[in-house]
Each structure stands twice: as structure tokens, then as C-alpha cells.
Length: 107
Image (cartoon, rainbow, N blue to C red; front, top):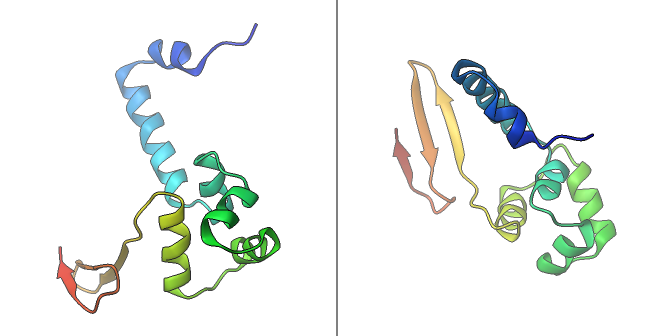
């Protein structure tokens, strides 16, 4: 008999739950665009319609390893998210580039 994840999670120790959550966050940080789309419950056809492009065009975009930031931003926004670009610089400095409007915030 299949068990629900919530039932299994509730039986985990707090330490195990914390480790599981951290692992999930790390995996999410490494996701490909297609995986992110699937996580949101959208098909390529659904997302392509939101973007005003064809499904084959979206398929090509999802398989690219290089694209313009404006294209990536449109895709992420069509998925209901916001794109944030973070640069890690020497000296443990982190700069968050604010939506490509030409300004930067130092964190």
C-alpha cells in the first residue's frame, strides 16, 4: 500500500526533516527550466500559450544552455515567479542585480 509523503515525514526526527529540507532546497537550486515548469504543473503547451510562442519554440528554449536574460525573465514570470540575478564577488561580496533596470543592490 502506498503511503503519503506527509505520513513518512511526520515520523522523521527533527534533524532528519531539516536535512531533507536542505537537500530539497539544494536540488531546487539546480533545476533545469523544464523541471521548474513541471514543478509548477504546466505543460509546454500551457507555458508556450502564456508566452505567445509555439510549443516547439519553447522546447528549444528549455534545452538551451545559454539565452538572453530578458528571455529567461519572461519565462520565469510566465511561470509566476520573479527572476533575480546574484553575482558573488571576491571578498565575500554579493550583489543582487535588480530586475535588469540598471541598478544594483549590495547585500
